Length: 357
View 1: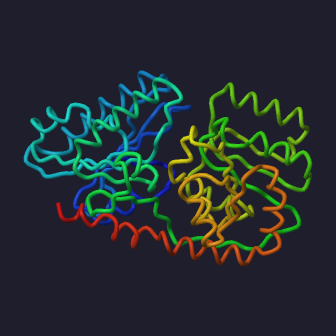
View 2: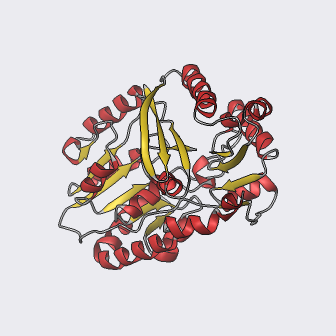
View 3: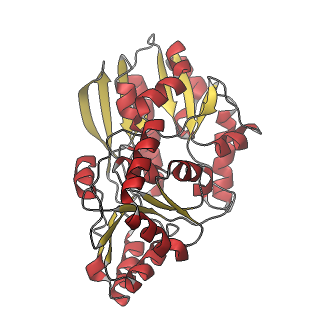
């Protein structure tokens, strides 16, 4: 299966604890990337970990990914060994006929976590490739009902074909707000995530502060640094253009009060269709979420009152004021949300078919 250095979903922990042998290929974002990672678990214990060469170059990045995927299934699994490839990217399914000739006992499960609207020919081609493999793989899961319906014509809920969203860990603990308000943004930084609106909000509210934990390409980083300088909010923004470990992020979050997840809205944005990991990360960190009214997770934020869902960045002051007034009730909402998606229970119910095979 594939993994991430950010523990969104806790899939690595879950499957490590419920498999005889688990090989995890951690493919990092292409921005600033030079190395991926391989981990092997035996009965829940990490027995091997090493770096895997990668590149920030588009073609070399995917060429390395494909080469190492084949290398790993041929190196770490014998010809007669029964094993499952659990993947969210069609690159794993290239050459399935040859894979089965070399490893006759291989099985596949496709967990589709995104849908890219056809706003460019390359995205249209990618979605056609995904659909091609989706229709040829017997076990398919979807990160939202929206993706489920797009791939099947309707929402299907069978044991081998169903919606499975990200699970979370029941570990969030927070204290109340202080006089100042500290906001946290976590994730790969892209132009469609509302940071420009947040910068303008900071200009108008000098007692609100923002930390950005994530990376972007050099051009976008330079553009944001220039905007921060032009607005004279450098003392309110911390943006080192870097990720931190999960442990460091947990410590860092204790000094913050809310997580920001503003996205572009509409049917032409990928976030509309999926369950963004950023929101579940904030929940685990014990941070009430302020998010745009988009994606499959927004109704759950409202249902459990784990944050505020807004239609426009102009509603940000009111959302923050509400969180400041009733912080304890939002903390209760976070705990209820986390209990609903607690990954051990949630995945045990969702992935029973994988146990059967």
